[in-house]
Image (cartoon, rainbow, N blue to C red; front, side):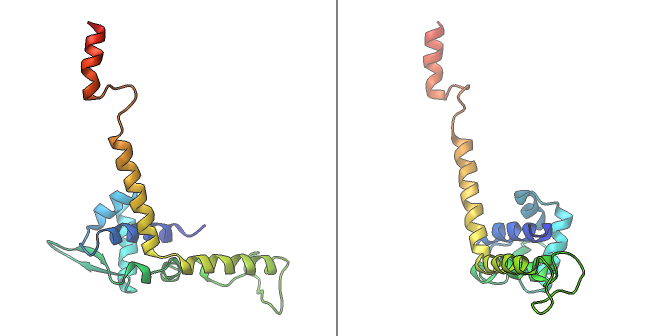
Length: 164
């Protein structure tokens, strides 16, 4: 699992990427992504300081990506937000552990961590935007489907005729 801040950042930046350069208010991004607004504001400030997003106050302001979505990886976000996965440390705790002096879990954790790092460096905000776009399309499709227990307008006359 990644730190919650990284997950929130990935979801928020995926949403911002879908706006295609149009500034979005942090509160609107937070609402759309189900993130506490105050927490997202702190994350956005950290990401702005690291050059991932641009922010503009005032009318017409908001947050936009400062780089192309394909140029921001999940690994970048992990590094920017201090996720423990990017810190080479022993799985068993604070003990010094290395290839030269390895703990019983060192070989397992090294391979596991390497696989995580590889995945995180290959997954981008563009991937997150595509994921969110598919999710939004699914929600829109669900909202447009008629419920089974409620007759559609074109069926209302048939139901009335049958009852009468």
